[in-house]
Length: 555
Figure 1 (cartoon, rainbow, N blue to C red):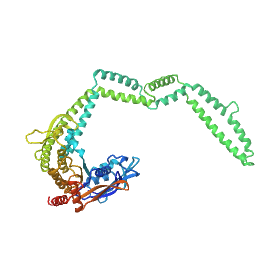
Figure 2 (cartoon, one colour):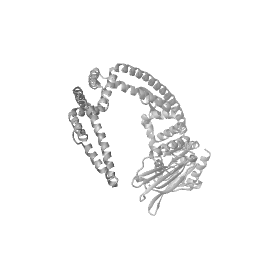
Figure 3 (cartoon, rainbow, N blue to C red):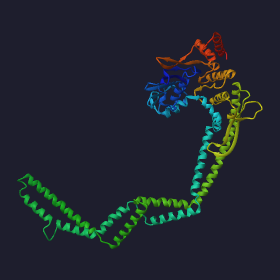
């Protein structure tokens, strides 16, 4: 239940803390006193959109905090999924709104996203406002009402999964069923690509290896000449070579190596140079011996290199792109070549899924028919209690083509007077009737969920007298099963409160301030009398108010 609501600097509310009981909590107050601000505050901590206009004029920020105790198990699990602990099944949702338009959401004092707050709040509070009655005027939403009442979520999910598979198979089938001209044209194009690339048996990286070998073969004469000249310079058998000269230098210096440490070091370096240059000479000889000037190999390298470069220019830029083009083309060609078999397979799967979806749609339709019958019966009982015994609810149920929601089109109809055929609610129901019909629907559907708190914002619109009294009694009955918060202008409803809260607007230091205070019995008498007769409260009004309050205790 919502145990406490704290509001600071929200519109005309400077600061207030409201405590609630677990049963029926009623808000009353003069028009414009600020009752809607309380609802706005609750909407804010439920993750609804808010603007900087909510911040009290002259203040930097507004703050709203709501404490929920003994929350249901599904809310505890949702909090844990979102990474929030829930000690003692208590959760605090808070929202800070800055005058510059920004806001910060928190769950149990930890930063949270507005989306997370919305997910959690939706499991804790169900708000019914005046505009919610519009759902009755929108036939496209009536199917959801019956589905919710019939608890058909599981059936609908299974149906939608099969319907999704059917759509996917249908799309795949359509994509491969090209007309024969386009199919033949595509096969011809793909065949050319596969033949052109596939015949070369390319390997990734081959272009680099071919290029290196080609350059070596192309410059083999010059490379051999350079190798021979280099080797001759290092180690000539006919002339004085570099190795001979370095050897002579080393020999001359070695005579004085024991005289100078520097000379000894240079001697050792010359000796190392002789060894290194001798090794280089050997490597030059090996490289020269390994170069085989082969005209046929050179021709092959030239042609292979030109072919690869042409394909890279056409399908590249890299050789890996050429190879990928070949693989994709071969795969598509194989699919098109075997498309007749694939089409047969997909058609068989489509027919199977169509039968499955149709069967599930029929089962869902039958379940909706039964749920609609139960719904009409139960809502009828509620309407009779709400002083609308002659109003009969009916469900117009038609079936048609398969959609994501099944094969059904539903619309709730009403007959306001005996003998009249049911007609669309929008054409018949008055504002007062809509309020009571919506309350009846809420009462019936509420038994199917475990949301612990229900809020009714001016459910009394368009009603009075005995009908208002019945609404008050119904709210009190709901309040015995779950927590109810209700904003009302009617004494017949206000007297049913287990916790009566008055919203009052005052002017202090030139500023308007709205306060919320709980009323004791005497305070309730005055407020009930004011609601019935205005500000000029008489003794008779007070007696009538007291009688109403006492009558409530016997209801």
